[in-house]
Length: 332
Image 1: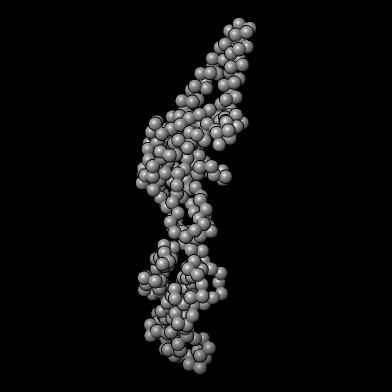
Image 2 (image 1 turned 180 degrees about the vertical axis):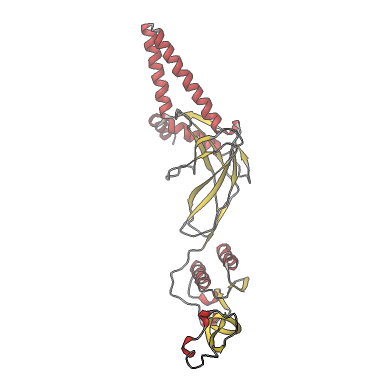
């Protein structure tokens, strides 16, 4: 193991140094509810590969100026050296004192991608540029943003949601190379935020068994626009589109109006026990599919799980309650 570390140090010294620093820092990162203020003690800075090339060029210019006693060469070398130091100061200052807060993270289904919203506040009166947010060693390119003066930038970083339940955000990095790209300044943070992952819906085709309830509809006595219920005499104020024009020639002095009744959904129970031929995760996937289908058909439905029952209802709130129960259910 030690020999491999020596080889990695010789082949990739910059990457090796950054890996060691990241491991040391991430062991000390604590999960916080936010806001997290990026103080000077939380900011780390190293030269980029362009920064190392810039420093090497400055060294060559210094040696050449010393060899030929060229005062103009000294002046240019010191000028570029001062420019590098000012660039380091601005790169470090671009990251200091920003604040990180957790934003909204909408639920997703297993197999999809969760998007965590992170809010970056800039209390300074000047705009800040070229911030990057990314997960540790993520293969995806980082998300770039600028932060307006005394304003807030909203950034969403993606994370695959492979399993149902709560998906914690984990540690992420906030970095910048502004203004010249000679230095890389970064910090690590972990906000107390998580994404709720619903079970992956099963493929369509399977209907709830009759023992689970009835999917049919029945007419009510209330007026509606669902099912034709006959004709009645015209009353003043009835819309013209409801007039039964075919009967008008037979009784021109007494026009008739089409009457409709409203259809009411019969209650449907989506029952865990009706899927005894499936394993636990397959049952949850099938129940998720039924919840989505019944909501799309605007049927009233309830959910029965071992130790939990949600009364029949419909609407976005009821659907979210059912999906949440399925996502967090723990089989015995």
